Length: 168
Image (cartoon, rainbow, N blue to C red; front, top):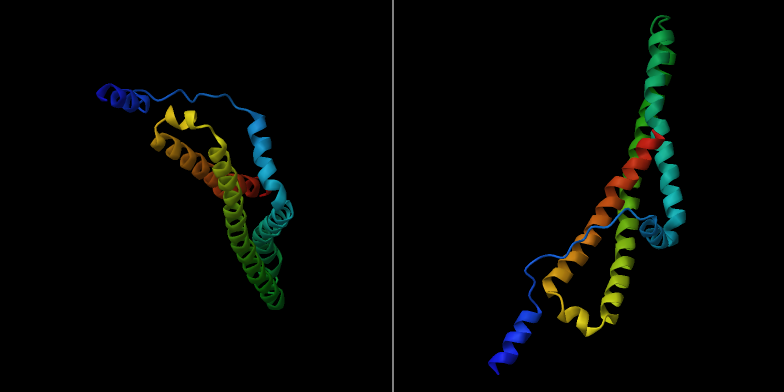
């Protein structure tokens, strides 16, 4: 009996972590594209919103140039008021666009993560028992959670900010 228990307890122990070194693979990004495909129209709308918001932000310095070069030296008060109103409207548009971007990307990202978690759960359910017997359960759980959280951060922060900065 004692001999049987020691073989069971040794089966689920690891003294070292296995190596997780892998090279950059475009196939992984293609797999991520599979999850993005159902949200493509919403992502296009977010990109258009980012473009509009960036144009509204860039409009501010141009309006200041007109005010400094033309309106102020000629003491054209109606033009100054018109430029001020246009600048205020552009700031409101930029605020609304960036606010929508944050909300939409968060919603798309969370929906995407639900899809990924569902597929991952289904995949884990289909694995043979030998897979779970040969690895500690905590290691499997931590790896799954960390991968999903890393993808969440990439989608919510990195990718959208990169696209927004490129457009700017």
